[in-house]
Image 1 (cartoon, rainbow, N blue to C red):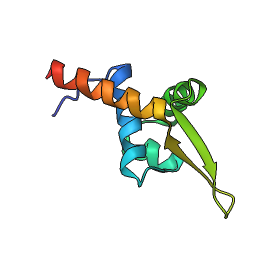
Image 2 (image 1 turned 45 degrees about the vertical axis):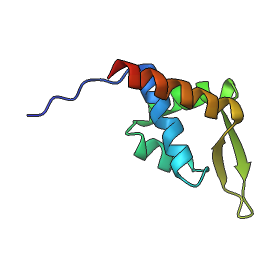
Image 3 (image 1 turned 90 degrees about the horizontal axis):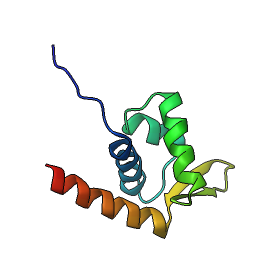
Image 4 (image 1 turned 180 degrees about the horizontal axis):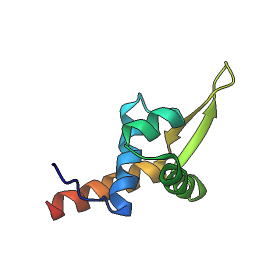
Length: 89
């Protein structure tokens, strides 16, 4: 059996930011949650933090759906977290 180590809070946040960036700079909540491998409760906690602190913005499309994008602050945070990740590997 393969044992997977739990991710730290900053690793989860980095995964969320990366998912949004890869998705043409925008992504819907379901895609973010699934591609960051999070259950709904953990997704809500971390995603809410990112929104509340201005790292993620939202945009309503013409069909009434909401997609999310990285703000300048979010792009900066992602770069800094990637630097930390590189140093720790």
